[in-house]
Length: 336
Ligand code: TRP
Image 1 (spheres, rainbow, N blue to C red):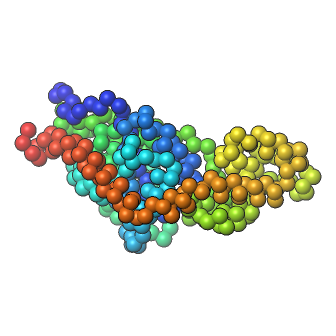
Image 2: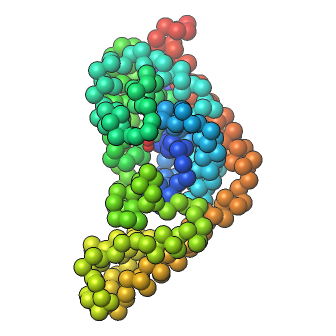
Image 3: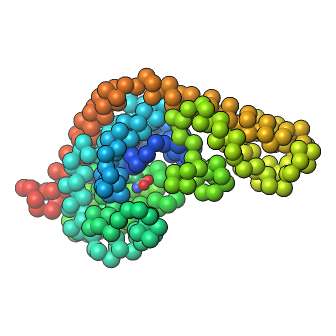
């Protein structure tokens, strides 16, 4: 077996991506951004705006993908993702993703993509969009190309993405078998240990349910959403003891103000804290938590974000070109 052709990086590399399909909300902050921030410094981090992946579901109305891309990156910055420590870039600015995607698409057996569970699930469940396209079947193959192009060792993802990571690992082994070269490390999933944050109505948090709080929401919107949250259903009168472990508002306290949560929960249990007061104070707290996001939006003119993404794309392309050159040589597309 020919030894590894690519450079082995001293600091392990991480790549992750987010689809720009709308404004980011509290769920993204808790589920992904807090984790991304913690990885900076420990890893060589690449964070990508997955706009081709967004286009796969939004191609009938793609007008806002560009705007959401900048918007999302403004939120990344406010969350502490630092362009001087991490590479922030947009997938479509690095055409090597598509070249590698084509080679991987050629070599990936059809059965492997057809049995990815998220594929059938999304075809069935996503309403109002026709996802039965040739490209959408390749969603996880493009995702594998995203990861392998940077020879990432680890990919921070939520549980829902594990089948995609597994496919990426299978693709690595297949390419190794076909070319007799170790072109990429097998990427590991870095499972994000996110606390369980439900939507403001107590259901699974989802933009399509309208139960999210956007990071850029106005203080008025946040206050009014907090006011409408469901609390403990067993507590009818204020004098009834509360059950914070089954109250969504109390769960938000646990996540967004862990230092105070024990005290607040105890006040609730002992009827010293009513549900109306609890919701009002949570609203005020969430206004404070989201303040940096409103400020970042006001500050970060689109031009600034565009420049960060252009610089990121250059740094990303330097790595991507090198990997792609090795892959093309291995497949006989360029001289050995
Ligand atoms: N599929 C991911 C999601 O929906 C987004 C994504 C695209 C991604 N490319 C990636 C995540 C590469 C990690 C690595 O969340």
